[in-house]
Each structure stands twice: as C-alpha cells, then as structure tokens.
Length: 210
Image (tube, rainbow, N blue to C red; front, side):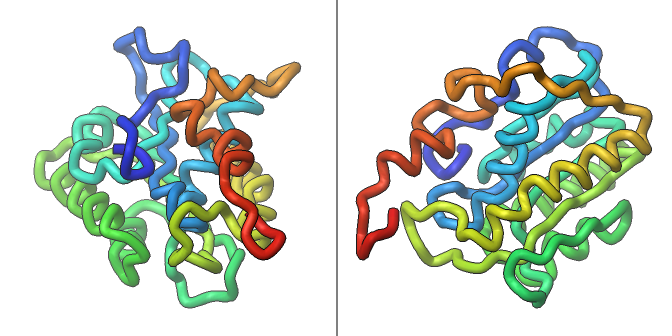
C-alpha cells in the first residue's frame, strides 16, 4: 500500500487504455520524512506535466512485489526514490540500467527497497524486463520522523530531479507537455489525504515546526 496506508495509484485519466509502454514510478513511504521523496517527486511531476497516452505515472508507495506486473509490462521504467548513497543529504544521482538493482539494495533505507529489488530480479528471471531503466535517487537527510515531511535539503532537489527525469524521458523519445495550470490535489497521483499540501497542513506544530 502506498505510504503504508493506501493502495498504489495511477495518475487519474490515464489508466483506462491498455497500450502503455513507459512507467514513471515513485516509491517510498511519505509517513517517514525523506523516505517519501520518490512519491513526492512523481506527485509534483504529474501536477506540472502531462504525457502521451503510452506513459503511466504511478505512486507505487511501498507495494514492493505487488508492482511486479507493472514492471514486467514496461518497456521503459523511470524510478524516483530516496537512496542511501553515503553522500551529503540532498545530493542527487542518476543510475542507469544494470546498476539500478545494485543501488536499490546496497544500503536499504526501508523494506520497500528490498521488495523492489526482488521485483527487478523476478522480472529479469521471467524474461520480461524493461529495455530502458533509470533511477533518480536522493540522499535522505532524516528518516526516523514518523508523520514528518521532506526536509528542506531534500525537498529543494525535487525540481532538479524532475528536470533530470524529463531529460531521461526525452532520451527515450518521450516528450512531456507543461500544463497551463498545475493539477489540483484531488487529481494527484495519490489519495488527497497524503497530497503534500494536505498532509503538511494536518501535521501538528511541534517546536515551531510541522
């Protein structure tokens, strides 16, 4: 379930067609501070850009092995996640192709990464593995804050991570279109209850900080 409490969700308006090829996937748990980076990045991307009908944008949350059918069906897979690279908090890295599973499991910041590493391994064993694979990861700052949101150093990298993702998609021949107006919270990739604005407004103020 996404964020440990909700089902995974595909961006509204794009889940009826059967002929899709590319999956843009944010994984992580938004209830544990920077672990929610991947979900927040995809949420922001979807709010600002639209994509051709063969592209799916998905909040994968912490679904792990239940994402296997999606990964096996994808010709191209772009992942956003918080990864412990051992770097300064907030640093971004782009990992490609055969290196992606190695970084997903090197230093796990959450059990969802172990689960997703298994997803990639299972897809490879089945012979149904993405031809193009990329991971955009951020070094987390804080993880052990249940109910917390992204820390400033991590949140500040979302725009750059999106630009990086758009560049990767362009390499794959996928053009994004900037929306005239960002989508409303109810049209987000996840339930409105965990949309970042709704989520942060509902967090209690402790020591002057939500």
